[in-house]
Image 1 (tube, helix red, strand yellow):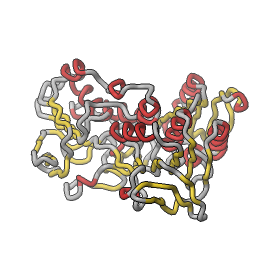
Image 2 (spheres, one colour):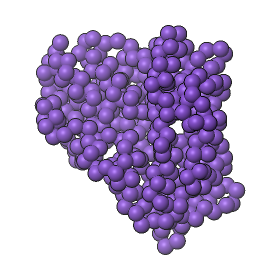
Image 3 (cartoon, rainbow, N blue to C red):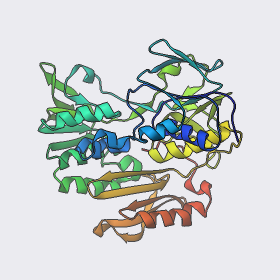
Length: 401
């Protein structure tokens, strides 16, 4: 199976690189170009909030492939030159340096941009964590800082809080949600995570909005809550969510919403695809549009995109999945767990911090969760979500952390 045309992939992280590798693996012989805004060779993002931030890994260890493997792709890598505009009809991408790159087929894999708090860009000591450079800058600061406030109780904020606490900092985790990850996994699981953080010395200020940041002489000094309470800090991480990186696509001719709007094969227009965090595609099994923000989706979706480009297309109908590592805890979630669902323990014992659980809504299993029980969670996924069919995970759309 071959494709004779040229293919341009915008975004060289996990989704973009996986698409390129799948294209070569399945016989594409034509020109292949990967364009990325960052100057670094393709790297993995999950370790940024854990091993890289902690200093346990050198940055090079987070690379997705070594130089020899990248050269074997026979692809042109254009790094450090952000895409700023697209003419979808012509499949022409303009970059910040003024270059115009074209492909017979275009794949958009530009991922996410972190949300920010008003005024944060004017204060030193306030960080986001999306890129390798972000992680290294935050690590440098945490090696000299004493008090860290993390704003945002989702997956990223909770992981950063856990890593920073293990580094010895005084850490406060603040956010609107009542418990860490409660908005994703429900307050029962969230309460267990809250206990884990509290036992290790993290201060929780949850269930209240952040009103703003305070500073002196251009340096952040704290986080002010809507209650008026001031959380002192000499370092702050803002982890209040991300948005699909689609600003450069305004006026492109593509349909944009919560991401690049695609059909069930991840096609956004004739000869144009989207993959990874930026893609909002039609999930035929659920009958709804879906956009997922996780590493597993990036690589699985890339296989479907590559196959469709090469003429062997099929609808992309995954069962959503994500994981998080915090302290000695690994949580894995399959399907669409929801705070509104009934949670029942299927195996293990929460008191022993090792169990697998099922989420049910209207009598149907909608999600499976493993807490330090990865094998059992996978088996439950196969026995419940797979056997019942992918309709069993419900009919709701989700952005999975």
